Length: 227
Image (cartoon, rainbow, N blue to C red; front, side, top):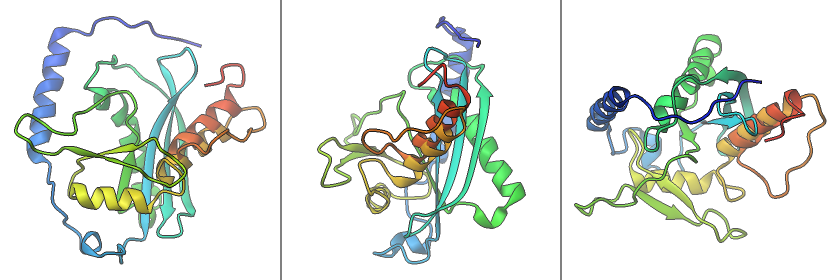
C-alpha cells in the first residue's frame, strides 16, 4: 500500500492556507445561536455527530474517514458512514483541517443527500494532530481543559466552535461523555475498526466512537497493517 514521506510543503501553499484560515476565522460566531443551546438540559437537541480520520500504521496517505450520528440524550447510533480515502495535501502543523476536513465534509454531504432527517444538529471533531493555545496574548480564552469523567484524570481540551459559545461547548462535551472521550467521536472509531478482515478485538480502555469505529474499519479491511 502506498505511503508518503514527509517533505516541506510549497511556501505559496502555506500562504494560501494562512489567508483562508484568517478569512474563516473572521466568520466564526462564538455565541449560542440555537434555543437548545440555552437550555440547561439541552432540550430540543436530538442528534449529535462525530467525525474522525484514522490512518493505517506506517501509511500517511490512506485513511478511513468516519461519520457517526447519535441520538441525544440516549447516545445510540442512528447512522454511520465509513470510507477509505487517499490524502493528497501535505501535513503542516497548524493546518490539519486543509488536509483532512474535505473528506469529512463529503461524508456530511452524503448524509445530507441520502438521509437529510438524520443530519446532526452539532458535530464534534477529534483534533489530534495539532495543538492550540487555550488563551491568546489579549487574554481571550480559546479553549478549556475538561475532566470529562470521574474515572479519568487526563483532561480533554474543548476549543472554540462555530455558532456555539465555549461554555456551552464544554457543557455539551461533558454531557456526551460516558468515558474520557465524547461518545460521538468514540463511536466513529468503533465503526472504522469494524470494517477489516478480522474479528474486532475489544480495545483496552474505551476509545472515542468516531475514532474507535474508523480504526475498527481499518482492522477488518487491513489486518496486516493494524493501526
